[in-house]
Length: 299
View 1 (cartoon, rainbow, N blue to C red):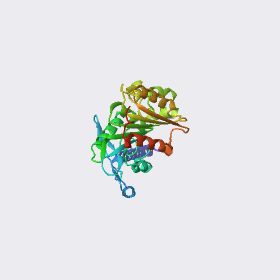
View 2: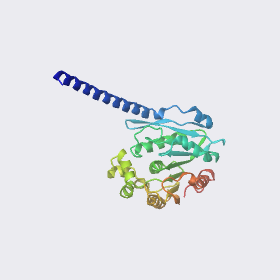
View 3: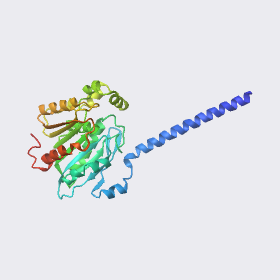
């Protein structure tokens, strides 16, 4: 091959490499744009048609220079007047599934708002493994619920499962408005969780934040509990949960009782995902703390 042919081949090779690089960068850009638009998506008309009492519950929350688009739904109870409300913080399931799975709670006469915390579902991120932005989103959702004319602000409960339970627990550390909280399959002391959890969970944490002692402590519910807690707390956890050992739930229950909270615990035989098996406990807890006279709500 002569010199001119070699130079031509080299130029073609570089052009091919540049073309491939451009295609890769274009693909990444498209995916990034799609992810950023996720929280601003148009709600499928078919979903709302199937749920006539459900409406979008979307809002923006700011934390420092960052703004997060929070996606959610609010399903109204058919009961008239100012009704109690349940705020569901989703860190694992979609808000659409949340609406479907909690129809029985709406039928009890409770308004149900389902939101995805930042970085999960259709809410913008990154999540940073349930960082301060999740608490900010939960507090803003409480503001919006409490301001509604069809919600009784003195009868609001918060429920979180998995990462949502961490967000709900951290909310309890900083906001005394919820009358009751339901914490399901959560990690409540990240510093003690780190050495005993699975490699998969460790990698999941490292994918979002560097697990320094400061970062783990910042996300630890037990490390920030106020000296006195006047709400009721229902703790649900699986005895075979490998990613989040049941010892996390037991430690939290002890710490809450020491601070005066009214605590109920239910430990199930399965692993991390409890599913609809918690419905009887949920129904009884919400009935007692939101629908009855409320005498057991704070003790």
